[in-house]
Image (tube, rainbow, N blue to C red; front, side):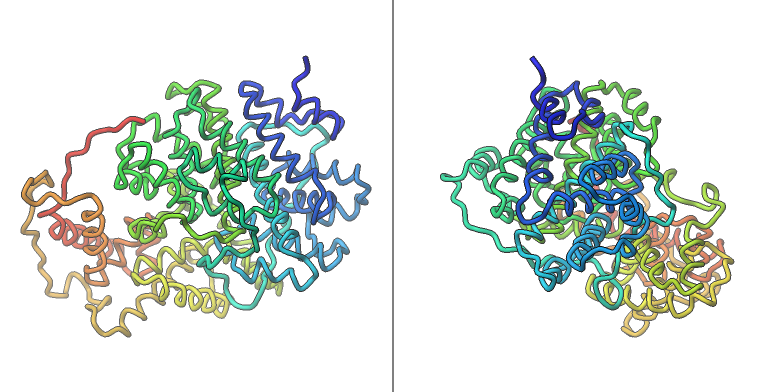
Length: 588
């Protein structure tokens, strides 16, 4: 008897995509993925099949995903789209002679698919001016989320194209600004789209979510305009997340948590912290997993599993065979590795979906996560971060050259590449997210104004962080209630000597809960004199190399190291009466 999903693929496409052939170790997963893909892509309602395939092609090209570009280029050819238009969509859709409606859809898909954390209500409702509706935009969000799912899945599986691979130019599609000014991380005020009311006792998917989770998550309540898609999504949750025969449920929830945290998706972090709590993981432990899983009480093998998921989700261009070998080295089976890839892809789908819908958290997000997550760049190991040693040619050189030659759109590429780091740096120094957003606007405006003065004496990213640091420092000075940042440590007359030098051990009389302890740490950092807090932020939070941090602050290496040591000692002394250092490993 033939496998039903494969028969359906052959009927609709004329072949069975290798992306799905590569998952035959888990037939239940293929069935669920096929149902979702058919519901989102093949069923024509508010958007046509060609409009959806265009979005898939353009976003896949922006992700530089050869498998998806090749597959959907072929699909569009079969649907009658001329090759010339297809090639332009891969390079720059704005030159593809599209209608205003189709151009608006592609611009939205690129922004949501690549910088979803910047999506606002205006981005979602703006296309209404071109005649699009709530139903149209819901489908656009679903197609974008499906594209991110397929790109992540094909990268993790190493799927080979069925047709001659389509080349993707180095300067392929990029997002187009939807308004004036610098885009900032969005504060969801949604849901952005209209949804119809559904009762759990009358609607099977809602009854399923209530039975399995105890509530119906807002991300699903916001999609009731497409009940068929909700049924398919429930099928994916049932087949991928709720099974225990390969990876454990806790392992899967942790993948959801760390990838969502790296994507700055507060909604998904709040939901899956709560899911872990229901599975017996403490709120404090789930917080630590979200902030930095390497410092959490996890087995080494499970830390490697989360490293793998983050690499695939956050840095797909750097994903290699060695990442798979690392999991095999830790004893993971081929089925477990496959399910880890699928879980990571599902997380990118849910993250993209939520950011497009703008749904508010079902649970109050833990304050400690939001404050800390903004300081954790992608949560990847330090040896995976870009440094002068691994990138002798500055990765920003091409974008800077384009801006200087008059191609102002290229400056948005710079913003997209560095906005997270700049924002985290600012919020870490200033301690106020609202003020950090204002300072972020100032930072990029100053960088644009003075781009012609940049002479490549340091990396461009160092120069940009220097502007961000100086902007934040100036704001601190204007508060007129912090110590000077400019004192020379060797001549300042400060002779700090730590009084609490004992090891941090449990003190039963002073033992705080982990939540209180996290608050103490945050409070301790923010109470440090500004010149020490800034150095701690750049070195210990942003983990800039000492040379880059010193250059950003205009300090010599010895002065930087002196400030860093004093800052650490001051923080240690503040926390010594309370901190507990006895940690035992916790296995999934």
